Structure formats: C-alpha cells, structure tokens
Image (cartoon, rainbow, N blue to C red; front, side):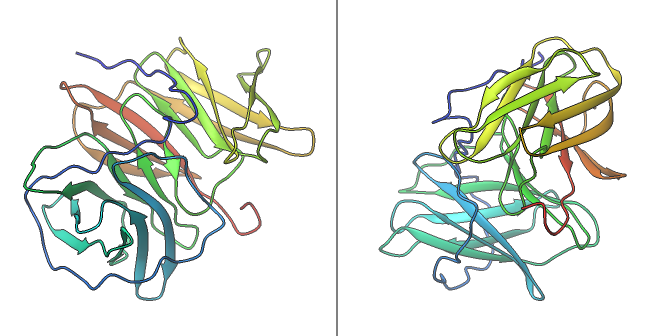
Length: 259
C-alpha cells in the first residue's frame, strides 16, 4: 500500500529514529563532535546531526543515550558502528564511494531490537551531499543545504524543501503556478507540500526576497526496488518505506557558495 507524503510540524519534520537491526561491524572510538553550521531539529531518542567530508571519508556525528551503540548498515549489509560516550555523542567514519551509497541508520539500546525505514544517502563527487530520507517527510541534508535542497514524491504528493534564514518567508512554485508561501523554522528549514502533482517534467522554483533557485526534474512513480541514479544536478533515490510502499527523493547537488 502506498504511503502518502504528509508534512509534519517543525519539531518533528526531520525526526530520524535510529533503531536496532542487530547487524553490526567494527566499533571505532568515539570522537568529539565536529563543528558545523548546519543543525537539525531532530528529536530524541537518537539523531544524526552533521556530516563532514574529508580525504579519509565522511565523518558523521550525532547524539543518542549514553552507552547506546549506533550502527550504519549499507545496502550490501556491511556495517560500521560506534558507542556513545557519557555525553551521548557519537562519531562514525564512512569510506567515500564513487557511486551513491545508502545506509540504514540504527541503534542498539538495552537489548531492544527493531527497525524503521529511514535511510542515509551520500552522493558522490566534489559537491557530495549527505542527507537523511524519512518516510512521509522531506529529505534532510546534513552538510551543504541549498535554498532548493530536495524534492520527495510518492506518485501523487510532492514535498519541496531546503534552507533559508530562520523566520524568512519562502515562495515555492511548480511549473510557474502561483507560489505557495511558507516560513522557515527556527533552524532555517522550510517545507512546502503539493498534494497532487502529475508525473512528467516539472520545474520547481524556490525564492526569497534576495535569491532564487530552480530545478527541472522528471517525476515518475517510485520504483518498487531500492535504487539510486545520478542525473544532472540531482541524485534520485527510490527507497522502501514501512508497510511495503516506496518513496522517491531527489537530492539536489550543492556547490561552494550555496551553503
């Protein structure tokens, strides 16, 4: 059954519950939290907060309960894990790939074992983006964040999201239609929902009083298999949601100066 996209309130829009799968790999030493200008509004029990790309790979930091074991498992079943310290902070280093990489984000806590449908997407190339895709919600980049950062589609409803200044008015339009006006939350994140957008080529435009960004994307119903394709300035990911549905997410590539 297809899961319809719905906008959650600002406090919940970026939530990613990192729940246990039981698969785990090497447990690197926890490192101090890396500084970042990008923060999320994700709530407890656990969250990914930053992604820093370096010559040795992608360093991910976040928070969970002290002593929890955080596991990232890629689509091939290979896992990397870290245990949070007394401050609840964890750090993971992932090897960079020349292709799009997909990882389940999980947590093992006090013996509980369950699994949710969130995925971490890491795009390739010099303008790489790490983003969390969440069932029924808008994708959330962890490093570079554009005014027009992502488009999510379930075959009917569309979510268009990105970042502006906190409290800034943002206008979002599809194919030149009258724009929908939204307000960026306290973190600068904005999300606009369009409940019925037919498949086909669609031009998305996001603008504020001082800048604008456009993207031409060809929408089609999500594939019934996990896949990722880089096309032009966007990476499309089709990924499974709980209950047997699929959601498609387009992660827009960023360039220096757009942060």
